[in-house]
Length: 223
Ligand SMILES: *Cc1c(COP(=O)(O)O)cnc(C)c1O
Image 1 (cartoon, rainbow, N blue to C red):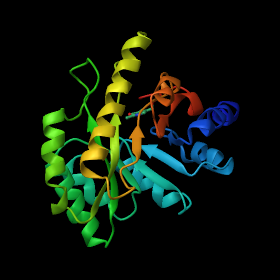
Image 2: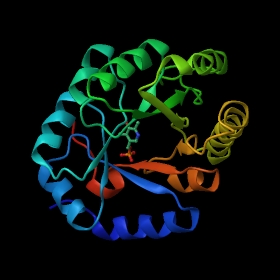
Image 3: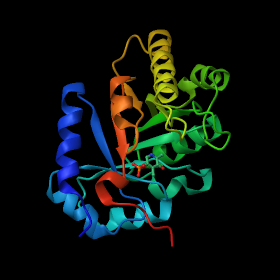
C-alpha cells in the first residue's frame, strides 16, 4: 500500500506545537488507503469531487469527518449536505445560500470557510476583500451556516518569501474579520492554509488546518 505512515507521524509532530489539525487529502486515492490512515488514527479527510466523496463516505466508518475542499457547484450541494463536516472553498453568496438551504433540510448547521484569492495566478478561485465583506454583512440570512474561518492557496512557486507574504496577508485579514464580526463568539477560528509543498510556511503564519495529500498518499495519477 502507498500510504506513507512515517510522513504522517512526522506531520503530526510538526502540527502539535501549533495546535493545528491535519486534513488528509485523499482525492483520487482508493478506499483502502483511507482505511490504512484511519487505522493509524486519522479522522479528518478532504475530498475535491462530490461524487467521489459521497461514494467513499458510504463505504467508510461514520466517525470520519469529511471536509470538502474542491470547487463546489451549487447543483451538487445536496449530495454532501447530509453528512459533510466542513466546506472549505466557498467563493460566492449564492453558494452559501444553497448550502444553507440544503443543510436546513437535514436540520444541520454546516461549518464553512470562505476562500480568499491570495495567489498571483489568475486561475485560482476565491473572493477579493470587497466581496468578502459584502458576504459577511449578509451572514445573518444564513441560519444553517456557521462561518468558521478563511481558506487560501498560495502561489505555486519556489519563492518562499512570496508564499509567506500571501499567508501573512490572509492571517491579517482573518484577524480583522474576527475583530469586526465575530468578537462575541469563538466560532471564527480556522485558517485553512498549507499543502504538501508549503505547509511548514503556513504553520509559521497561523494555519490551523493544513490540507496535505501527496506527502501522505503519494503523487496523484489523473488517468
Ligand atoms: C489537492 C489539494 C490539496 C493537497 O495537495 P498536495 O499538494 O497533494 O498536498 C490541498 N488543497 C486543495 C484545495 C487541493 O485541491
